[in-house]
Length: 483
Image (cartoon, rainbow, N blue to C red; front, side, top):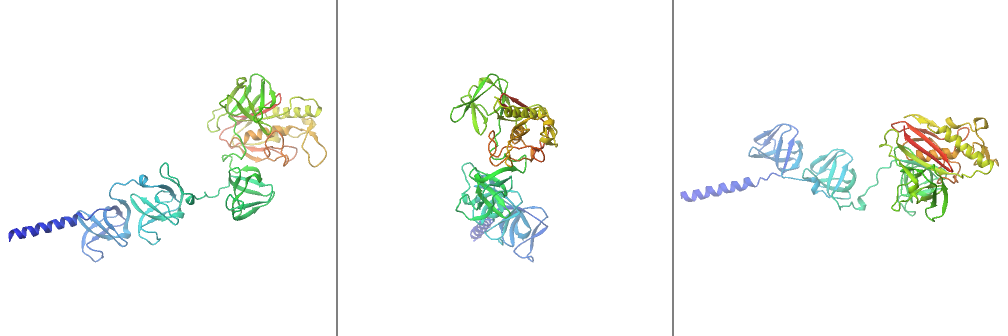
């Protein structure tokens, strides 16, 4: 009989041990206020313990209204609404488990199921990184501190693969919010399409000679917005780009030249595509050139084509430093244009004289940080009494094709193209005409003249700049230095 009783007691103890072992700790958490731990799911149930505000607890079961907790060897229940900061009780690594990463655009609740009324499992702060296990159209399945649940997909942005080799499916890639980087003018009526497809939905129209905000361009299509219409237009019909922020991306078509080449011996410039000899530049000239290629050649802007120089042993390369890395006295931008060095007619002689007037007046000019630079303040008026001669001008309003100062615009244009390579604000600039001029790409000229036709800048760099100009044997070069 005693043996039977002993066996029954042992069995009971084993059963109790099994029951105790079954109380697995799933999560840890904390509480937002002091609470009584109840023996059952009722505020009138007997008290088996208590927790203080902010105290961490072990969670056995996390429910809609009541959460089963363990403390000091006893288990009981507290109100779920006061339990926060759930974390998996065992080790977790959200970053390792995630397939994708995103960013919360507002404060978010991680729900137990795909419902706005489902049990709150965790919370995310505005701007917090979100570790995503699975992507969904309406809800993403996520994990935080090892706790898994669902958040609204449209509140998560910046999706990317969490590990190398994982790519975000195309249907989940959302376009960034529109931010105007440039303005540009349409040269024909342009349809704004929803997608980069001429047959996609029509969102609006940009009319000829109308300016539109541009966010980006890939060469074929430009991402634009006009009023409430946002979409894509054909980029080849946008002209006269201007950037809103001088520290923003380059105007499409702008090229950064990393060297000013000082010519040590007479050197031949070839057409890069055909190999045709374009001209010989003489010793002492300075030109903007590209970096060295494998064949030890360099390219350079030559009128509206690209020139090429093979005999780079005849060049001494002065490096251009990025504006934010330049020390005092270092070169930060350079650009060159070309003119006919053989001055045979009075008009050609006058044109070169006027170019030299601009070079002389602007060479060694210092533009202090924050100050404005008006080209005409240094060079106008373009009159005989101010030292100018007659030279060829672009005139579409009369038959007069000569004017005092003709040729000075090559100086302003060369300066403008150097300025485009650094964050200096262009306050005012206008082209000569829709046809442009032959020594720079279309739409990259900067006309000046008497009255309000001017090139106006503001030095938005964090330091003073110095202009260095040279016109030598058919090469006009503007260099800009950190003063």
